[in-house]
Image 1 (cartoon, rainbow, N blue to C red):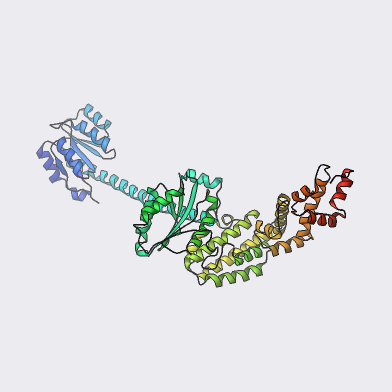
Image 2 (tube, rainbow, N blue to C red):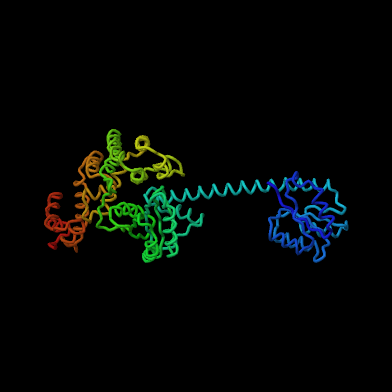
Length: 515
């Protein structure tokens, strides 16, 4: 790379002599730009890229030293050479104060001048290489940051990571501001040849309407947007602007609005349901079918079976379920497979987190489920990865000091203790611990030695006996407080459990006839 020199001197002989007798090309410079005074020099600075200034001190219109001061303020890194007929120390001191690099007295020693120009060229080369390296690093960092952020939004939307203090600390550290109370997801689909233009058009419309927009899960023909908006009207205003300009081939799916990031997985599921609607703009409607077109609902039976197998440490059952899953997603599009994969990992982690087993603990803090899904190019690769993942989960859960079954039973007991006054059932308790009713029933009997319904009844009856011991209690009130809508049914169960009717128990406890 050749550098540019501005040579300023009112003596034409000196200007032309330096221009002619210095081998500028060999030194790495273009032929110098010549100026006879400060006025011409300023014009040259405005019209050209100048890397080095070489100037006389005494110029006809202004002081060369004052010109150096002005150049230094405008171009603080530009090397400055002084040419002067004066060797006065005061001139040299002033020149140094203005950051002058070299001070040459006239007549100029051409060899010394050439040597100084060569060393300055080496310094400029080094600075240029440093700037290029820094620019390349900044570009790589910017790409990596955008990539990380895209996967962060994708993992949040799919429930792989949760909204917690560490997430908000990350937002604060990286100056990510989500100030509004409403969140929503969008998915834009368009042919690859117009995808970039339609994405830019939609983003511009949303941002012009006051929405904060982040994109994720981008492919050649689709992209998802996370929206943070003041209210729903912002999105409606954006769509009024976007729709008339959008190509007729596009499809835009829109979820409902939720008040927090923690509810984004619901929005992600809604995008799948919205895709089943018709029209260019497809909004989620609660009346939409709650199972996706690929047959894998948000509470898939196969997903539930796999969770059951993991919770009971049933390796054979887990393998059989994975085989069924493979037969399902081998026929799906890559995008649909990725969604199933990420959703499945999120549900498994929701269960294993209670034992300290998370995706981060298994694969490192930088693990991304969506990125991993995209790297698994074929259904077979995805199946093999899941098999190894399940094997590791089962091994870690089995090594836990406290049995996974004991953990589950303790959670069930806590749930019953907190909710026995409600209309709880085996199914509702199973749902609370993310297992099937069959496995909860089987596990409860195996660990405790009693049936689930018997344990629930004992908790309710023990509480009923405590309440009936209070002399001002009423039987129908006690029945309601322990989860029975029918006083008659409560009385039957109470007699079976205690051998006494509720009024008899109350009478013996209080020593009177109140009931």
